[in-house]
Amino acid sequence: MSTNKIDISTVCEMFEKIIEKLGQLMTNKPTEPTDIDLSAVNAVTEQLETIIEEIRKPAKIEHRHTIAVGSIKIFLSLAVMAIMILGLSYFISSQRHTINQYKNNDLKYRYIKMQGQTDEENIYHLERQFRNNDSIRTIRRQVEKYEDLIREQVERMERIERNSEEVNKINQQKENVKNAR
Image 1 (cartoon, rainbow, N blue to C red):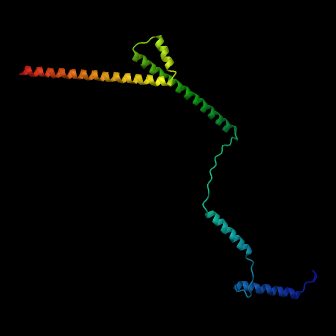
Image 2 (image 1 turned 30 degrees about the horizontal axis):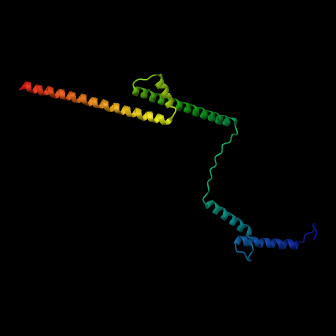
Image 3 (image 1 turned 45 degrees about the vertical axis):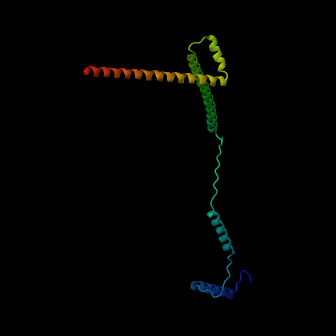
């Protein structure tokens, strides 16, 4: 067979086969079974099933927090916050020290008030005692005990005063009743 000459009989046979196939396709009744390669379809189906199984599995959620100091704004804001935290920590510690000094001074005043009077030597001795925590506790207990005793004494005096007022009222009522008879 050459490219210039085509045999008419083979072309006619081809057309007849095409017409026959078209007729079979139109009637949907194939006359001879055809083997179709379904291996590609099966492979895609298996892949889809494995993907579906993976999707149905519960997902593991991982949280990762990172701080990226990529921009100068973030770096400067972190630096400013760190400086502020350090500054405030120093301020709080100095305030705590001042408050402790006030507490100690208050206790010293109450101790001197408990003593009734003092001189320079007693104040110097008191200052030396405040360097030791055990003596501070001892002084605190002494002062609190003294203040409790004073409080009780004041309450007793008030009670006695109230009782004497009630006795005076009763005596006046008694005299009024005698005078009325």
